[in-house]
Image (cartoon, rainbow, N blue to C red; front, top):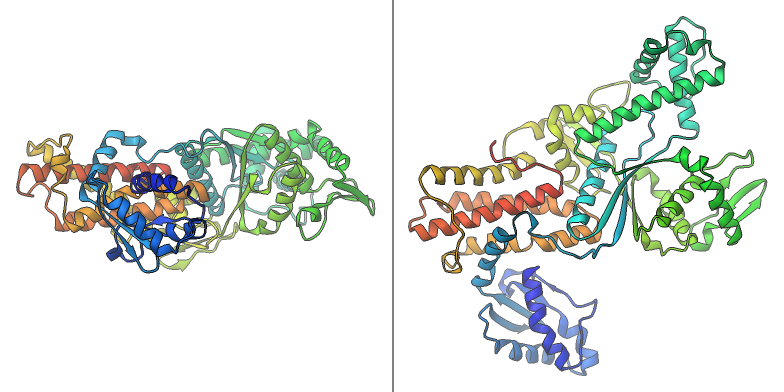
Length: 552
């Protein structure tokens, strides 16, 4: 980002002089072939029509103007091909980055691209009908990391969990627990056909029996069902909260669906849609005219039996979100909700918002492996299918890093044995060890009486080798990566970056002696470079919710 900003500053006067300006089609990025310099732009092509010149002529004019600038940071500028402009920056430019990183510390990479824009990130939102599984864990890591990134980049972020505590699934939960509870008491009962059959249901039933004895069994049926449902939901929700806390995930708001219904918000939203001509009665049901906004068919809001659909509550919930003043609403859902995106985009528009004000991120399934062999993921099998089980075995650092190692809509293989190994084959260990390795180096320096001081530009000028510059340029890319992660709502860009940076550090450490570098000045320069790498690794890992240990 420093490099792009610097070159933009150089190019802007040329544009102003000729009555031109940056266009969305203008790129300024590293060329695929390093022989063409550090950055290249297609600006001449995007300006050609307005300037009334061919792209190569524009590029040559820019080359002449920029070549005369004598600040020393631009080493070379040249026109290539039909009109590309290639830039090579002086080593001093990249070396300055070390000073910036050490000066800014934990704030390095931060930017105000959000300008205080209010964003809500709603994630996990699993029905409180059972413990969180690893699919929920992937969504939890994604949502929490995304919130950290957006805040770091200047957005005002609120994190939220939507409690689906109303409807058929909750009734089934209550009926399932009540049936098991009555079984424990030796009462005759029929287990609901679609009920929850996991072992945790028996545990909940035992807890209810321990608390109430036979008191609940002697209540009228509906009252007993209500007691069983409320008891089970409270216990499950407490477990979910604890699992998320152990996984370093924070939800600032816990929003209740049943509260939304009790408050009358759903009915008010349906009346609003009716008043706007976007809801209509047909065949005894109430329909949402979602096809007006590109959905493939209209959707039912209230069935002919009078019961509400999930969509009715969801539209009311999103109306509430927008009424709370959020500029952007981000929903993180399981991949099985892909068919729901179109109708919720339609709902956002029906509520008077642009479709891009609602962003839906889909999270694909996780294949849990042990030494390459897939683990059965059924509740009955009971082996490591819950988030709590996985965290207990590998720890939250490993789980979060692996969950964030790929784009969320890609399938993910998670090998438990691999992430427990303290070897370079383990990507989590590989990155964390790079950070710990630098701190070990700094500790050895202290034991040898070498204090890593604030470097000067003159000292850093010794970092002029090809490998030095490769590492320096990688550090400069950090803010670009953060901007991309925030703009595309994709934390995996950061995990890829820290993995690459760790690799460059390990290679550098192997080929470049630090404490035995020779002159005291070169020792200080390399120590400063390593400290800068450690800082950027720590900042990147922190945005993923992963720790940066100083000892391993």
